[in-house]
Image (cartoon, rainbow, N blue to C red; front, top):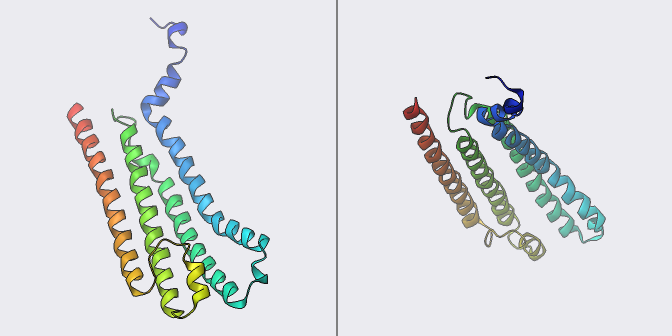
Length: 190
């Protein structure tokens, strides 16, 4: 019996069951995170200008400029990562799947791990290179101390690359385990 009273919200229920209910907000979240990452270096520059960075000694201004370039590179990398992955959220599950939420969360876990690992590797490596180039500059060391990446130097370069790799692999393993379980469940159900 097709009763409008009992089927009034059926389109809403179909929207949830198709998985779009889960995929669409994550797609927009990814786009928002991409925008935040590309705007973050601009915000840092705005704050530095507001705090009169150019009134500081030349070494501090130069060190800030180098750090800002690091943030710019990391922001651009992060922007591209989140933007790229926003286009792939729609492909993690299909309307015919019974389990549609876990693949979306799994994709977010994977992307978040790629983001954190890439950030650690990018910022840490460039931080290490800067400290190697300006080994004797105390003003640079004090400015760079805001990054929790160790003492700088070659050790920080290696540590950042290894840590970034381990983070990316670790998050990816967890995400793939979740997707594997869901894939088995979906195939078993059919």
